[in-house]
Image 1 (tube, rainbow, N blue to C red):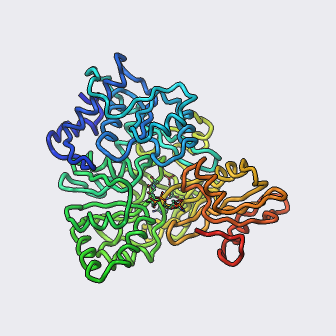
Image 2 (tube, rainbow, N blue to C red):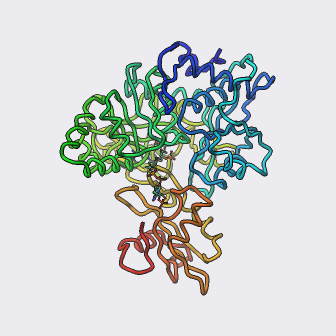
Length: 508
Ligand code: MCA
Ligand code: AMP
């Protein structure tokens, strides 16, 4: 009935066990499968196989999200999850780039999708209206077929669609099931966005694969998350460092009595994980003090799923991302591509295995450049110390990680240059205790123009994701350039070292 997709076949074996909890209540595996089949029927509409047509969807974290994802796969389509908070131009870019045939839309996003997809040849399918869909016979899905496209920023200006096949996703899931020992007795609290690997694969597909229960929370709110921990029953939690920093702040501001209850609540969890960005050692230590948990830090990337992880059992070393995960091959490479071996030597992380994605959507050249002799080049530099990998940084200064999101400085600069008052600009990521890095812009205004952070931010937020909008601004008369005329980003970063010492600085 699933077309041979192991994740969905396993769900079939779970029958009437609870799979999900959302605002509407509990949803059984069997109910999700019935709903997914209806979605598949509604998408196929008499066709035998969608044959990898791209189907986008924009849905809040609820059962329909899973039914839609599975339904697209059952019908032979490629799923393209859209970010619910992106403004219309970002959504339009993804819809256009994937040449999506249809988009499944929750009523609350209809307006936005109309704006984003108005000019495109695109079927708009309201979610939750599949009751009349004809049951269809489902195609058999080979594991090498494309399954998912996730957009990720890189060293090029616009985000690229990273395509994972069913085999890639299965490898990503199975390695985490083994490494983190997911079981049907687990219950996880899901607070992450559902258009990235962390929220989709690690936090949703893993519990579904394991027959565990995943509880959706509508976005992240520190107080609500603490309330949920205190109500009991949650066993697994995973988040980005910014979320742990918010949880720590909420604990700090609670009364001593409440703090005791909050801390006690953490004792009933079996596993708390951090990833997507570097977890500061101070946060690791503070969290241990609050919760008794040594956060398990791991390292991953949209293109590869997870690659390195601290151990479930054994020492979790703060400031490191542990060792290679099962069936993931890792090597460190020098500038010349030669492997670097031995303790204490540093190199770029290269990854090989079934977990590694297939291609950047319709970008053969960028796909070729991303690989070397079958290895995917991550662009992250690490060192091995006593078998544990420590991330030292990235090869490109133009990639910024903010709140767990990867953004491209080049993309933001290109957008800011279209602002009527901006003559030239340079965007950098500046270390920040809450966001990891903060997107900061140095701007040279056009003659006679002035510009403020508020204006720039509200202009930017209409055009790009909120986390890409600069949250600190320096108005400059010249950008620091080298003899070749190239902007020197390390010098630009220095402009933000003393954020509040001049009137043209605006830090939120
Ligand atoms: C939002 N704001 C920001 C940022 N984001 N300000 C500075 N820098 C930012 N990055 C501002 C907003 O403009 C707004 O202010 C205020 O903060 C609240 O915005 P809101 O959107 O409500 O933010 P939030 O809900 O508080 O978001 C914080 C968050 C979120 C929960 C940490 O960023 C998040 O969910 N991050 C997780 C991302 C993730 O899952 N990444 C995984 C991808 P104003 O109102 O003034 O505008 S990486 C991945 O998948 C790989 C494989 C991996 O390894 O995991
Ligand atoms: P994304 O492209 O959004 O999938 O982000 C992947 C990038 O996040 C990696 O290339 C790393 O730069 C970064 N990353 C993920 N996990 C960690 C971690 N635990 N420590 C440091 N950086 C991380």
